[in-house]
Length: 200
Image (cartoon, rainbow, N blue to C red; front, side, top):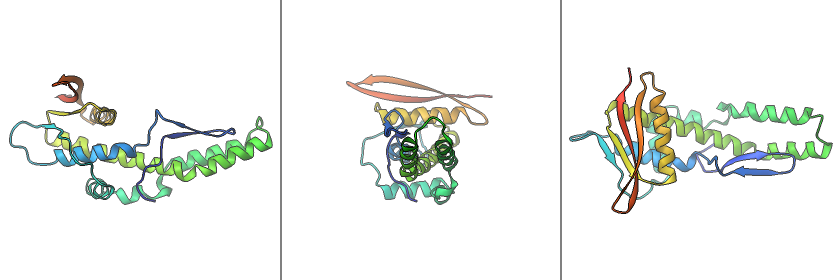
């Protein structure tokens, strides 16, 4: 498979398929992670901080090139057989087959809906795995270069990415303490991820 957007998490039932818009496809955040990774991974002369300057979003080709550089097993992550979601799909198919409460027509519809969303769910799993690999690479750069803070415009995407970065840094073997702040400057809202200290 490849890297592409599919959509929010599907809720599959015998009555249809709904999309949970609160659980967006991780693909939508990859351009932000790639931008931050490329911007932070360089030699620093003065303070070790990063202030995002608005510019052109990277193309899909540029995103893939960057991911291949920072995620050594990138191509392996694209293989559809390497995802635990297949076990979840198989489990849901088995439960549908064995259901004692569904009528035969409901069972048939549910099985069709699960099968119809198979590739969709695999693609979401691929996108999620690639996102967390890229996030781990970004956290490594912050740690390696002792970045003191990252300041970006206040948007939903930036907030999501910085929150993920905060979580990734907090789960390190030697957790890195961070603090997210939202502030206003010149009538514009910004988010600042401040690296507070290295925990023992």
